[in-house]
Image (cartoon, rainbow, N blue to C red):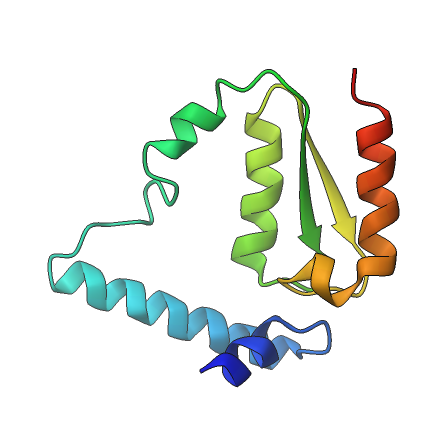
Length: 117
């Protein structure tokens, strides 16, 4: 399982791999809905999303350049929904951007922290 997730989220994953991963994840969600499990699609963060929207402090949302579209768009959407949200794209990274590209991630984080009031 871990190897599969790593392959799906790595910066080197092809478009076909990403499409297959998205299909599998969507299929799992369909199974959950069919069996009466709670829907996470409407509000994946649950009540946490509403709490996040009340934040007034600056928030940095980092997304990997090669992350799956759902996660990439979700990160951008989260930053957009926050009054003080900001998105940075970590080049050549997948879902685990800080781990995959620490040399690219750390300067972005430091620059953000230096701008904090």
